[in-house]
Length: 350
Image 1 (tube, one colour):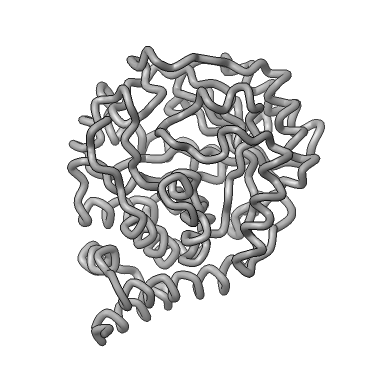
Image 2: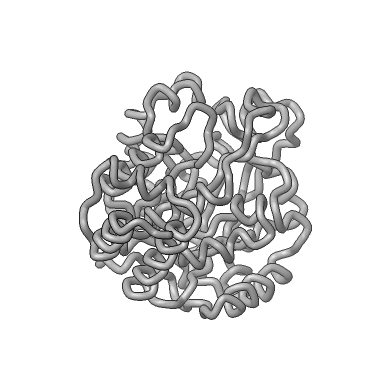
């Protein structure tokens, strides 16, 4: 049975109304038939605003070297069980060119928050990718200076992904020793000022997190007016302080995906690899409740197994040529199609 007041709230959200923290908390807590109604509304908004295409963004994890010691992360600085690596600029460019040949419209260059490439080396990689392919380029290399962000934007980078992880300042400080949420938000504001398409996001199920915190996460994304919102479950990683913590659930993560779609209706929302790693149909479930992006891994196989933020990550043994038809089949199997082109934000005019 679905409560009439819940149906009315879902209808308001679908129509684009600004929801309060309490209203988002209500939606995030839904289960059963009410949850199905939430998912259906989010899917209708996705179809109406973003269409049925699913954008593919090839992920190049070019280094697992990290100076941070985040309590949840498998490549944290203190984890001595990680075999560290750094792809050369030439390898990164070759991986991007390979993604283009496979039909992808954009790539994401991601690394730990370290100095695997100095700022000018990374700028050179961006320039080379832009000069030799039509790919859109997203960077995901963490908190840096405004000057570094500006250098990469001038080199041609189109987007930047910097997940805020949690909107609770105290929880953020506990999970990321020595860092503050306000620093993270300042970086996101710089990225906006510099003309990037900005992506952020959060984890679901962090120890100490509440449903109210998740509502705050979504409201923060709305205030930041992000073009992409990534939501994935917390998955405990071995050799970290949270190794024995309970993981986030599929149901709560899907509720958050649906609520983000209803709250920021024209944002790109990925069906995350993390969700696919805790449920065999995790990415398909996300596509059915608001998601419209998948990020296949195009990192060379010899490096993939060493970039594990969490255990049991899917697709560690496949080469990019194997992943592309698999992901395409997944998308078509859900009644969708693979979108072409760079997949820029619908509100981006640069």
